[in-house]
Image (cartoon, rainbow, N blue to C red; front, top):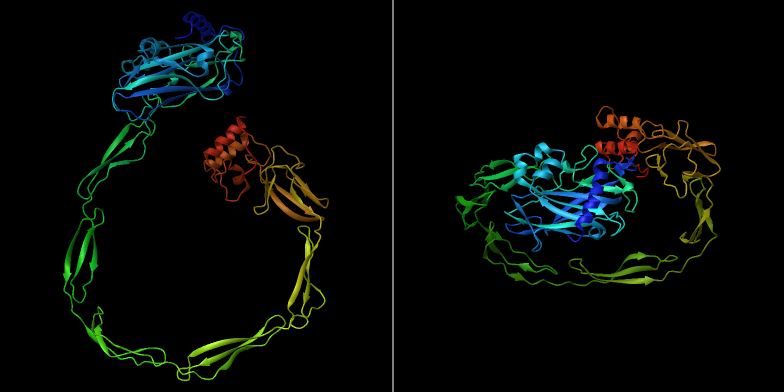
Length: 578
């Protein structure tokens, strides 16, 4: 190690006195120690490995407080993994990294089992057992603050603190049960011998009198295979069954991935679907049988070809523009021609005198016109059409008149149209819409507030809890007023009046307030628990249902209850906007 072992022993002795026995007078419990969190995370550079592969293991740490000292135990399955040295030095298996490597005295080692497993955990009965002693070894590291190196650090962003290398002794699909941190080694007030801790200092100064001995929350990722019950997952088909061969499927634990059950999927046998091919005049018919599972097929059930059925094709005389045909014959079933019909040329048209059609007189704006049309005197077919245009004379405007008058209201401005028409044809020549100013009178969300007035649902929300009036949350004109006779709580009614007459009515929503008293407390938690448990009937559209959906997923369930309990316990707040 690059740090002084003598200095490390001195500071470690001081740490042990403070963090294990807590003899210093300033080391007291804080009422909000659970707010201080240290989070370890283990990461491997491979998701799986083949036998003899080297795998790099990294440990990361994140805290929201100053670290006075820390100690870490990583447990590994030494039947499947072998710890590797990173150089020729026997004890150089561990690499200290990140800012803590330079700011603290560091020490690292590995042990077989006995001392650490029998004296440094809260579950000695398991860890001293023959199975654990023969299966697990540990990598452990520690850090101690030293004023000659640096001030104490707070790792607000996750930082790598150590890394080491292991070799796979066999093929490995998942490392989650082979490398892990166990809660049994956690140092607490009731288990002071634990080797897993991140001691907190009140300041960044290296001052042992500022150390808090216990209470910090230590969390970590990964699966502890010694501390969970198997949870069965869904069946997974490994080898599908076919028509002629069996397959099988398995169930695995969703936590650790161990196989819990195996089941044979029996062969299905062929399932044939028939497809008929009808016979033609000259070719026989048959049926094709195909397996709907594996596409195996065969042909059977042949039908003899019936032969041709000859019919006569009658002659067609020509006309002015269509050719004719001579008599012929063909098979009426398959269409094969026996005597082909020959074409007779068309006779051509005979043009008559032009006639006038579609006559339209001109008006003020539209030209007049008529069609000069020539027809065939034999078949009456139209042979030509020419359009003759008569020019329009133009409009004569009259005085403007008023139309579409809409009186102004409290909600919007009024208007009317000023229109000019032609005195000859009555065509509209000009239209201008003129505004009549809106009558004053409004009730709306105050500017800069989070208030929501949902006119479609008749709801008002976005309000804070504990209100006695809505000043600062809504604004309204001088001829508008409102009243909330039953207070500002979920389900209570807010009635507005405009010009002295009842106007708009809203139902008040305070998210989390389920008993209409405008505050959020244990009584609301009790009501939501009854709703989740089915002990209280509600209907879709009820104000209490709207106020109880705290995660905005349209369902009232345990997730909403968990949020409400956190609010009641002062751990979080509810947003009053959707």
